[in-house]
Image (cartoon, rainbow, N blue to C red):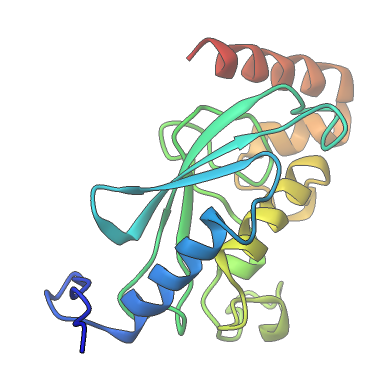
Length: 181
């Protein structure tokens, strides 16, 4: 019987999270070839993925043409707790913390518990049925439809609400910069 090489978790042992992530990564590479999304492992760890979002004008009129890199980092308790998604390419958006953070603020990446501030319902937050694919598709959707009621970047949120022309100018600058990086 052939043996399977162990996949190391941060604790150094084979885990169900590592096995699940390995399977989901393989699916993203083969079965779920989604246009505009590319992913690879950082080193050999299935717990950290480098993501590249290459948006075209049809997907997103604001961010279209941009090439945005991000890190998707999974906890050892995945899928019970959500991963984090952090853009490494600077991006101007109400729901993405300004550089150098780049962290994405979206309900499905918040822990599955009641919101202490009462803004989000538990049903809107992380659920183990979410997958890397559903996360990335949600983020692509978020780029085109910001939630300005809960802005992570206050300036981007203000411009989205009050000065769409300036907001668009700043976004297009990010798109140009992303193509040169």
